[in-house]
Image 1 (cartoon, helix red, strand yellow):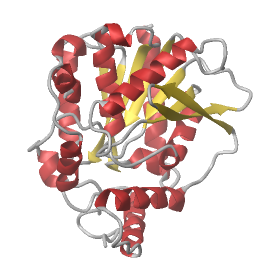
Image 2: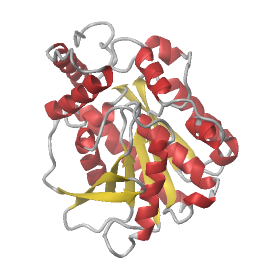
Image 3: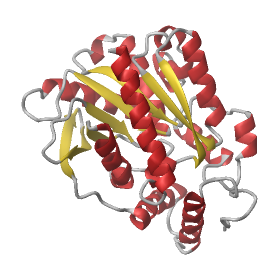
Image 4: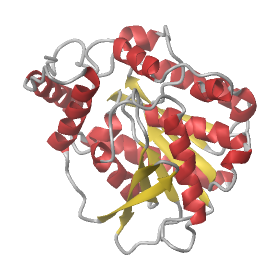
Length: 328
């Protein structure tokens, strides 16, 4: 168990340290030998979210199903009551492409709707290992096509949308933007991505960075878990291989819409995300970088447990709104 005053968590937000401790205790108190690793991680992710869940009465929720060949994609909208939202922000949840769902990110999506003023549409894309890459990315593009097709029929449909995600969801958001910029015939008819909000994205496998070495134990996400998540994506070739590592697609990165990259100070993914942001800036893309101090990986979905994490999400919404305004 991680103690809030142990050396590994002494420099992070105390509320986050206590939450990590509670999660460690939850893990220890959840014996489930009959479950596979994936099943157990999904169960714990759900229980962690239930442990800290604090609903906002000012946010209205609605559930929808996006039809796609051979499947339905569950989506959930979040909107301020009696408020007309300027945009729909399509949100892709984190969880290593393997865990996480609509319920695990209720708190974050409600706060995003509250602080950004946009309607937030959370997408439950297909997960690994059952559905290797690019299944999740295909689901994102399917939702973007649905948004444009349904204009005038639902209040959250727009010709242009914002796109964002946390962790693995941020990776998928960037991959979707790169894919859309390639203008593939099969992706025609999708709502255009007008801006990106990327919270601590994983961008490259097998990284050996200072942050990977410094925060590999005691801060939630570990290098071993990240390696397993990357492996679960599967092996792909052609364009799909480029989409799996979208940060290397320089031609498309240079054409990105206004993008805010947010990193956590105490996160193994910090350095690779910041290197990407600086590289994108060097290519001339309208990308801004913001590091959240005293934060760990996954802080955004813990806004109900940490006032400091909530403030960092508010700061990100404010900075991103200014970036979108100046780029308009």
